[in-house]
Image (cartoon, rainbow, N blue to C red):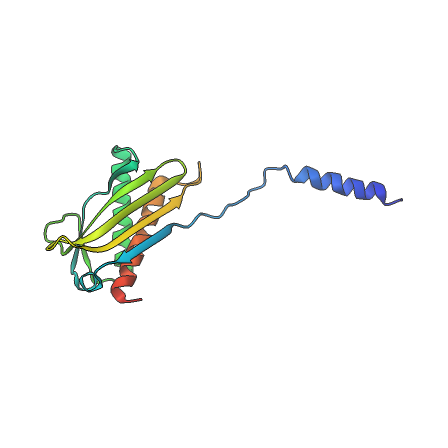
Length: 166
């Protein structure tokens, strides 16, 4: 009986602390990725990868910000390929490239950044690789440009892994 006030005080105080604004879920969400190699031989033998801008998809507005996101996405892909020391030169033009990357920023909202695209053989027009990647955005915490770059590095890592056979 003597412990009852102490037990009630502990229960009351522990209930008060559950409503304080402690930081929850501080982990940065990882990008989701899916890819499919259609022509592994062409992907491994291509010497030069050309890029065309990622265009606005159904849930993204075609504006200056989307153009900047497209450039950061491509920069992430290029930096990843360079960091992985992949013997695949990159260019911002389709001209002179063996394979060309083409794609869409499918969604850009306060909650999600999503892209889809493909690499295609410049000579034949046949698909070499198709991919999709997305990442959840945390409101007021994630910079869209950083997110686009991060998603680009995931795409570049996938291409590098497919070229090296791992």
